[in-house]
Image (tube, rainbow, N blue to C red; front, top):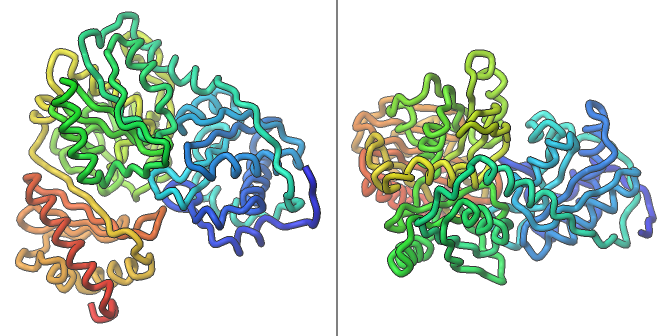
Length: 485
């Protein structure tokens, strides 16, 4: 590795245009230069050194074309600090987090999750789990000196994270209880596409590989494309599947269908997972389906801002009063906040989004039934969500602020102006509950220039139509002067 002039991390990061979103630092690939990756790495390392003792940091990547080079830059920066790198290659984010927590070392995941391939990101893990929002501020303001990078080292792949992640779930069962089940795995470009079939096959299922792609596919589990909705229906019929399983790009958000090929909403999947695990107390973002409370399956439910750091922050308080705590997000990522005894086996806490646990728990709950029947027994509340892409965050903020000042005027713009307002929630964005029970929620994405809309209603058609109508009307306002809202 060659080095030249000294740089200061805070200065490099301030000039990079890269910022932290709801989960990790995100930006354009062109913004994640070698020096920007190095700046994040040295700042993160110095922050971790204040509270933890370690000589190694774990790194893994997703399948984005830019991820490996970014990982090499992170490793080169660690060389300057005298820190060893263990490189776990392409593997799901929860697999990296799990093995790093077992080893009590920090970790860096190079991934942009579900955002398009021209963007990427970095997720950081402390030895005890995800970094907090306070850690993010500390990283951005840390004044760590490092030398500019010119040569980057090649990395040697270690398979341990992948193997331990597989063992985490297959060890929970001593029988091939999925025998007779046919599971389709929509592989696309997911970081876990080469390991998921091993889990399901070891549990007895027959696995069908579907939709593998040599190009990166940005799957958003909260806004499933019409094409992917149609694919699941076709695959389920063609291959007589009991479920289709997939994830987003880095494998921490699940996407799973019933036996008919209908994708489950992530919060409904989380509800069923928590119930199967006998969780006492839940923490979930404010955007999640209200069927969680209406089901009366849990002793306590806490609502937070959107983003795994906010969900995780509540685990400490919940653990004071409850033996089993967990959380999940509307995207389906499940966070296990306490060690659990399941099927007579210890399932260790993994307080970061995970895609495999909810898939296995759903199949366990439906072992003697169909998934669609499980869902049908839940309270009739339906959530639909979508987003306007390439929508400047500043314009989204104007809409939210104008809506707070005059929510009635915003409802008219959305095409929902005939109903009276029951309550308004400002926890994250603007969430308006109407007297007829419909809930509409607007917020800017924390990871990309997108405006997201969620609707919670008594039937699925109303939920979807309300989102489509609201976003269509807001797109018209993208062309006009937002200040006139």
